[in-house]
Structures are given as structure tokens and as C-alpha cells.
Image 1 (tube, rainbow, N blue to C red):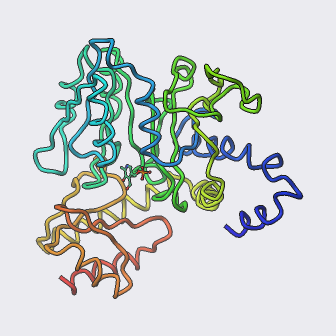
Image 2 (cartoon, rainbow, N blue to C red):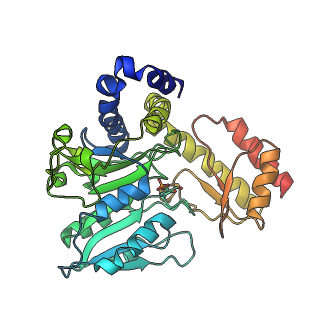
Length: 346
Ligand SMILES: Cc1ncc(COP(=O)(O)O)c(C=O)c1O
């Protein structure tokens, strides 16, 4: 942020826009793409994940086709659900696949909802409320077989779960850099499958999406050929600066290492919790989990506060309890100490 301040201080004499700021979105997009397991040129930074999703939805015309269904899940982040719901006056039908236990959703149930009427399957890869990890490959396979596209919200997985975006053939990813990517608030991103990009014309748009933005041409817009066609207006440069150190650290540590540490520690945390008879609201199977562990407590906000006073920093979500999220920078000793403090506080 001091580097931003310095560039801003001198930007008129050195023209920071021409020197680096204009290119910054594309450079950061490429670095995020690599972490997501996608190709260079497949990620456009966005103000946040909600706008990224809105951009994708604005490419669809739900009114003039029978293919108007959006398949979603009951474990998705509220933004996603609000934004999908907002498409219904434009002709979309949203089918939300329910979770019986509030923690998991059987893959078969999602697959059963995908038919020839589906335009888009839009799901969390890892759920914000239970850390449940969706099985990607069968969903992409079935959706593509029925002519539907697949969007995954990877906000809760990118940086702690290795993603094989190109291999999976998934069409869109949305997310942001605040969580496992250790960035500041707020920089979102949108991945679009490279061979799909040129076929889409987002109605949520702006001058930065134009092929020659500095011509300031009259409408209609001529979308850029690159993933920049999914941009809107001026990028938030301070947000981009706030992303850089986190990306560098995650690149150096490597997502595979983050995952290995996370899997070992969260397994241990769950064993610790179950031995004491606590209710764990995350899947027991490490292959069905992201990086967080939810442990039920009666008074979530009060417990967060009491743990905070003891130097243990966690959060909570309604109905599921504490959300504990050790990352690569924690030590095993810290994780053990945190769980012992939790036992004392409980
Ligand atoms: C799964 C998921 N999606 C989206 C968001 C937030 O998105 P936005 O960048 O729009 O704030 C969060 C934030 O907590 C999240 O957990």
C-alpha cells in the first residue's frame, strides 16, 4: 500500500497509468489464472465476486429460449443466491438443490437437476458455511453433455485447494483475493474458458471492455478479443496493489504445500473435536473438504469474542458455529494451542 501511495504521490510527473497501472489488471489476472490452474489470458480482475457473477449472467438471454434454468445449491454464498434470484424477472428459473444436513449435498442430486433446460450450473466449489467441497468433474461432464455451462465460486478454495481448471473444462470461475490468497479488500476475479470468451457479450460492461478504449468511440461497443471484454470501468488500483504480496507468498509456498499442511491440521482438529463429543459441521472426509473446519457452539459471536481475547482468531456462521481456518503460516503448535484454548473456553 505504501508503494501505491508513492506511485500516486508522483503519478502526474511519472504517469503511473502509462508506466504500469493500465497493464496491472492483466498481469495480476495472469498470476491468478496460474493459481487457478487456468491458462494465461483467462482471468479478468473484477471489483468483487458478486460483480464477476453478474457479468457472467449478463451474457445470457433467458427470455428467448427454453434453456432458461440455472442450477444452484443450498450451500452457496448469499450473494450468489440473491444475484441468481434477481435473474427471474428476466426469464430465468432457478432450481436450488437443497442440502438435508446443511453440510453436504450428494453429487447425484445435483446431477439429477441438470437437464436440457439448463443454461448454467452455478455452485460454490467449497461452501462458505460448511467447507463442503463439490465434486467438479461429473458435474462439468453432465452439464456439457446437456449443453449447459458451469460456473464455480472458488472464493473458499483458491489458494488452499489445488484447482485443475483447464483440465476440468469448467467454463467460469468467480472469486476474490481476501481469503486464502491473503490479499486486502477487495479484488475479485473472473475466469472464462479461453475458447468461450469470444462468443460472449456481457451486458454488464464499460469502456475498458472496448477493443480500443482510448478511441472513446460511440456505441455499439466493439468488445475486446481478450478476456478484457469482461472488464467494466476503471480498475481499482489500490485494490490491485493490496493483492500483490499475498499472491507472491502463495506462489512461493505453492498451493500443493498449503493443501498438504491444511489437510493434516484439519484432520487433527476434527479428531480433537470428535474425541470431546463436539459437533463438527464439516465433512469428515478430507477429500470432501476445503480448508476450514466448522465446530458447533451455542453462542457463536460470544465464543469468537472469548477466543479473540485469548489470541485465537476465528469467525462464525449462523447455524454452523465456529469457522476455524488454519493456513500455511500457522504452526502445528499454534493449531494445537488454539484447540486446547477452545476446550477450556467451552
Ligand atoms: C463463497 C463466497 N463467495 C463470495 C464471497 C464474497 O464475494 P464478494 O467478493 O462479492 O464480496 C464470499 C465471501 O465471504 C464467499 O465466501
